Image (tube, rainbow, N blue to C red; front, side, top):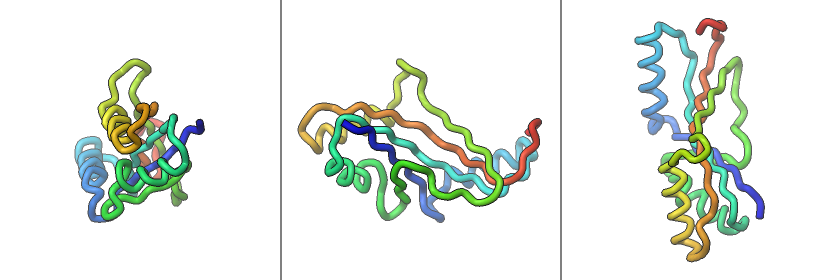
Length: 130
């Protein structure tokens, strides 16, 4: 079976975490950040395309508050710096475990393999020191 990759991002007005992080970094580290965008990445193996299409708007994201992108990050404007944070092999990932359990309940089948990561996109020009 294929591995399906999905990125989710909070819509403007719901992106509170990104706003807080930007404020904190600008205040504490005195950085000038153009924007911060946060994405949750899901890699799911062990499901079919029909199941993937069903879960991406119910388990992986909330249509009212989230954008959902298949396979790749959306186009990013201007200069930016990307940082991806994911669990180490063998390290417990609560988001991935919860996602896998929800998919198993919906499909009434085997639990799929799920990996997640948090993707931080910092917009603007940064020096090597920053």
